[in-house]
Amino acid sequence: MTVAATRALGGLHRLAGMAATLLVTSFLVFSSLYLAPGDPASFLVRGRSASPEELAEIRRQYGFDQPFLVRYGHWLNGVLHGDFGRSYVFHQDVSSVLASRLPATLLLIAVSALLIAVVGIAAGMVGALRRGTRTDSLLMLLVTVGAAAPAFVAALLLRSLFGVRLGWFPTIGNGTGVFDRLHHVVLPAVALSVTFMALVTRVTRSSMLEELGREHVEVAVSRGTPRWTVIRRHVLRNALGPIVTVSALLVSGMLVSTSIVETAFGMSGVGSLLVQSVNQMDFQVVQAIVLLVVAAFVVVNALVDVVHPLIDPRVAAAGSAR
Image (cartoon, rainbow, N blue to C red; front, top):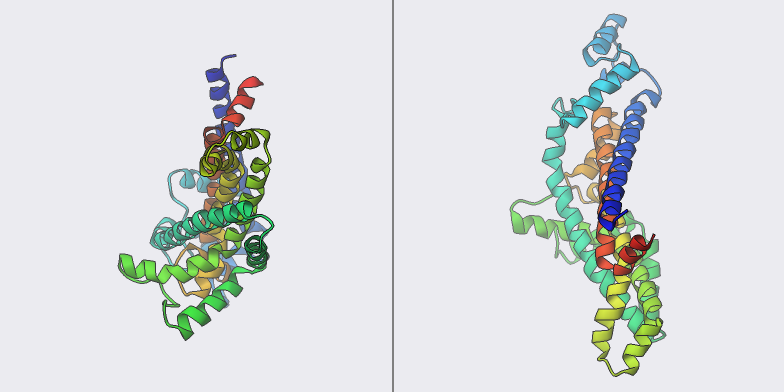
């Protein structure tokens, strides 16, 4: 079998795996409505007493009187067409509710991802190149503290110091306009990315230390190749594989972590919407967000599988040799 055919077959297997994962996830997500204690129709009356006739009408209106698999089929068909149902709380299409909240969350994730990539990789490189020095020891101390600091603790500290005491950044809301939104998102992005930056720093440092000990790196140094040329061509490039993999997976998981940060800073995003929907038992919205999170994980995993051989030719060579 040729290399092209092997890659094509691998791509088909990957797509089939993605489809199967999303299908199983959609079934589990939809089933969560029935796993919750109580009658789904009773959630919609919001605690007030309702007659059996009213409950029966609610079940008929929302399709709760239909068989489970029939309802799942209708819901899955709607999801495939971009229709996640209607919110019980907002009385709007779930797609419209998500569309109004998604930009704020995407901006938060984008700024956080930039911080993770720049600060995390740069700090890891410094730690690897200054191994055993006071700089490395201080960096590892900060990494340990950062990795152990929950997002809500970081949010409270940042709000108290830079928002309330110093007044440098706003502490609540999304802001209006491009620059105001960026100003509002700085503190939430730092709070969201602290733990992830620490993890990427540790992975970058370990990966670079492993590459620095390779024989070909020592040969390049002994031949008089400039230090930064060796680091750029032989160390950093070969170390990027695990760094990119870990960074991508962390960024894809931020969609869940945003719930804590957005709630702490009073942002109107998907994360705070998830918390609100869980508290108010708005199952349609919860189902849509959970499915969105899983889809993000699956897509990012697939992209990492595609990009990894391009970053590290050794992966592609190993795959071709099989």
